[in-house]
Length: 130
Image 1: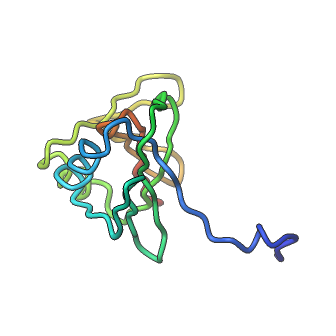
Image 2 (image 1 turned 90 degrees about the horizontal axis):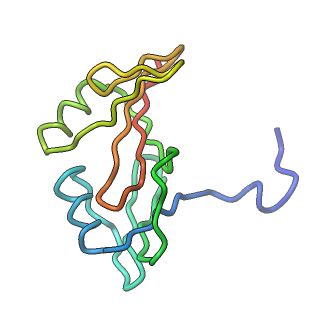
């Protein structure tokens, strides 16, 4: 499968809005255990596995929190969820047709998932492919 344009060959990163960058930095550090690799007056850059990155930027805009804005692909959802709960993270609970969580974790065909909101209202997803 080839790339039909130069854009198709680009790497990508996610950007997440924050109304209060200091509050967001504290959440990502204290609750998720993540430290930015770069901090500018406009935002915080985080580097994850495989060179993937996400950027939290200061803006007056506010996320709806109604859809997953970033997904973290992890190996062990139970262990990761337990570690985050110990840091004070609360997972979203769902009980809608096709999506029922038990202890914040949803079992779906081929994967297990959980969602949490950051300090700014961004919806973050954790997924373990089974």
